[in-house]
Image (cartoon, rainbow, N blue to C red; front, side):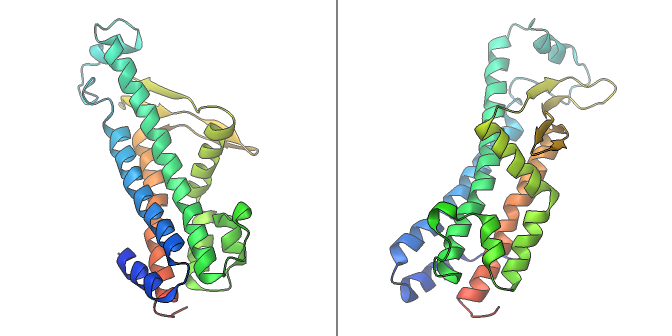
Amino acid sequence: MPQWDLNELREFIRAERSDSEELLDIVHSIDRYNWIFLFHLDGARDALHEVIDVNNPDQKEAMSFVLGASGRQDEYHLAKIASEAHILGAAHSARAIYDVFAFLVNRLLLENCIPENRCNIQLLAAELPSSCIKYELETLIESYWFGYMSAFVNVVKHRMLVRHSFQVGFSDPYTGIRVGAFEYNGKTYPPYKVRDFLEGVLEVKNKIVDCGALLNKQVVRGEV
């Protein structure tokens, strides 16, 4: 599995770039976004664990929360808010890391040819000359989960929050949070169990390592 050596990139920037301070700030932002994502990933996965044992085959307690009849209803409400907040944070940070990455690549490989107010990962991939990093970015952008995540973030940012609900499993044994279905740009996306949603978002976020490793290979070592 490839690794993205951020220290190698930082050393190159310090030694070779006159705009090193700003570039190092961008690299730092990518690193911080990764940690912010991991914080939200853990929070979204574990938000309900202190309130509900989702693996308990006796669903009476879970049903009491759904019906508003539990003596711990306030705890349940706060846990649901925490779950939704962490889901939104994970999706936003995983998506944002790529537009910050686009700023970095635009500066390092394209000499800032894309104006900052137009720079995004899709335009960057279109502008890059043929190379391994261009192919990797194009493959990512065409993937289902990148499309889903981009649509999800656009909807919750500009239109409305996607439905977030706690469901108790009977015919389906799953008990837990589900992220609802939504429509964006003429396409309908299905609902997902939170664990499947998080796995998809994690898959997208982790591709930044592959893209970053290819950036180092091209910028630091001159291998296209």
